[in-house]
Length: 317
Image (cartoon, rainbow, N blue to C red):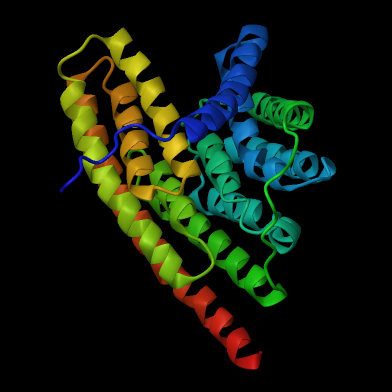
């Protein structure tokens, strides 16, 4: 007998996601109250940049050090918004800086290029000082809260030396080229190319392809649903629904359901864009789908190089 697909994530994952979302958003709201909305955005981005590192690292100096590097690069990126080549180099540098973490913990640095690109594209409307202080404060706050509330960490998934360098290189080249070209062509919502690429790219071509299929399918569904809902409800309702959709998306990501996660995150993004304007909702839906397809395609092509290194190691063993 056929069953109806689940729309809500498992309760355990929802609870864990609630804690993660509450920490990141709480830090952002506190910073916004203290120093204004721009500082709040920077703090939220800083928390996101070290979240995975914090969940896997026993030594708090690892996420704190990486957060400091991301903060400096985000500040530099705000000054490079009009220079596609310089912005590409800075975004790529955020991946290169994570090489020691890749070696010890596994692929935990994917959000760093997204944070730096967000600062550089003007998506977050940050100045250099706000980016540096906010990102570092957010990163430090997440590390501190995690140390006080988490009784254990996720197990590390260290990579071999060759795979570490291959994966770091593909992430740096892919994210740098993606944001550089998108900025040069003045694509609206250029950040989404980097978001999709970093979310899809993992060591191993087969796993990357599976992630891409699930994410693209979910994004197509979610973007269209979000655009339709945005035509029917008032703005404040759309903002509330967007928050709930984001929580569900993170919950599904924790249980490795890429299609559901992509769908809910796409719904949240389009609802926020459409809160005040129907045209913006449809434009966002189309941009999100197209740029996600582009980012996923770039990730799969780059993953072929990582997979070649993995196969060479398998034959050597």
